Image (cartoon, rainbow, N blue to C red; front, side, top):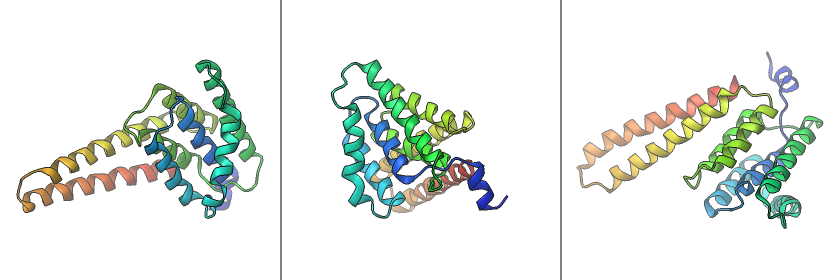
Amino acid sequence: MNSAQKKEATPYIRSEDALKIMYYLIAADMSMKAEEMEMFDSIGREVQSDYEAHRNEIIGSCNSVIVGTTDPDEYYDIIHEQVSAAIHNSQNSAEGDIMPALLIWNMISIAFSENEYSALERRLIRSTARTLGLDEAVPKEMEAAARTMIALAKEEEILQASDRKFSEVKVHMDEIAERKQTVMENIKALMLD
């Protein structure tokens, strides 16, 4: 299947809609952490060449819908509705450029960025994956990969802080780098399935 055929068969997401979905994810647990916003900005710069020019407009658009809602159930419902609307908006556009699985990986990366993956974040990510028509195993495998990456990063920190000889540490650091690369290759394979 060539890429043009695949694009027609897969509901690609417009970058602006993807950024809104990711922002709603950050807001889902009613607390926006600095680490999440840093990851959001990093992803934004990757997916949209003029991200900085549109950042405040995207965030303002999302905030205008959710600010003032204090009931947690109603708040989540509004976020879920807005995510569904963004997906629907993208599916009715010929301008989609982000694969659904990449959107899910970016959402998981944001959710894990502060090392606290809330039940509401998981619920929204899995619901988004289902709405996009992804196999239910995809977000679960990506969550496991994110946990592995966090564990490997912690292992790296411990090794870097140790008093062991450089030659001993280097061997372990090389192994960790190789394992990280394997995890990322598996994620890329998931995205292309």
